Image (cartoon, rainbow, N blue to C red; front, side, top):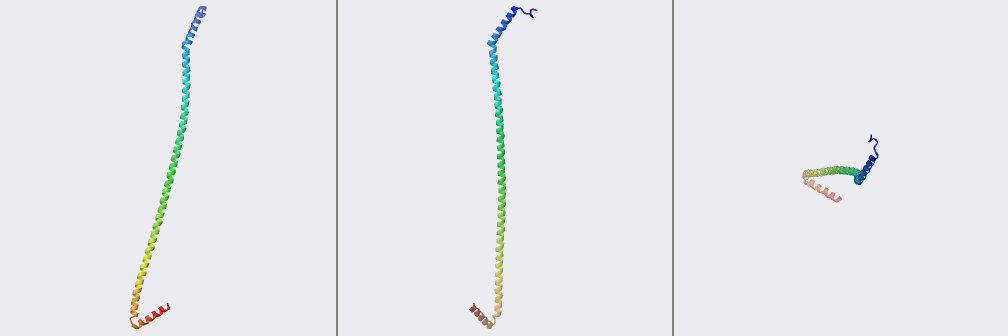
Length: 164
């Protein structure tokens, strides 16, 4: 029963040893332990701050990447639109050149046809004139075979010349 109700001497020595233990622990153990806990707490706070900074940087980088991606899409769309415009312009120029060339060919063909028509008409007129002259020679030879008729014809020509 002595342990349940300790004596005064035991209580004194237990208190003295406890205080001595507290003093030794306070002098040599608690300061380094508290120092280490403070350092640990500081390093945890720094790690949390660093993690938050890294998280914010990742958000800003993600936003920057999305912005760059959007800019790249916009540039791609602009380039594609420009390419479409150039393609349409080239097609329109080709159509215009083709229609101009077709008009030029048609005009050239019309001019060639007109020239050949004029040449054919000239040739026909020349042949008609030549045939007319040949026919007139035959008629004149026949009509003017008689000297009396030649004289009458010469008088008619002189009269016509005087009236003109």
